[in-house]
Image (cartoon, rainbow, N blue to C red):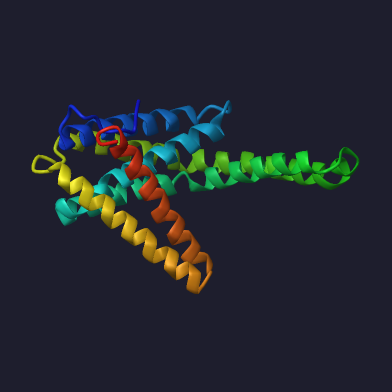
Length: 212
């Protein structure tokens, strides 16, 4: 799978192809998250695929029917949110693992072992609660429905210039957020700037192979 548009395909065909690839990836990763082995990586992979799907839509947002864009973007956003508790728990454990490597072996035991033991217990509880609430299954069901709708995405009238228009819009939005961060460095400002930078990164990845 490649998050890249190709020179020899239309914009509509490329976006639809990548949409299928990312949806399949997200659904597969959610299925794998039900196993204890590498479930953190599976959740991370699923959420990454959903972010890339939302960026895919944003690239040509201006040429899409408003209600269609809002619906599909909301589906992908809500599916990612259903996985957020597991993601947060996994990040805490990985942060603790990195912290352990930075502390001397002598201090590591009394300081971090009890904390890591408690964190590990919390992570198990988070994953158990997610399974009991059915959040991963709900996310997967909504994505399977989205996949069935994908063949009817209204992409037929798109032209390549629509992609360049979207790229310029993404850049301008990120620039405005950067200017806001220079004036005030609140958490929300930094978060919004980072989100727009990530969109720009995704859009450059999409377009680079089609127009180096």
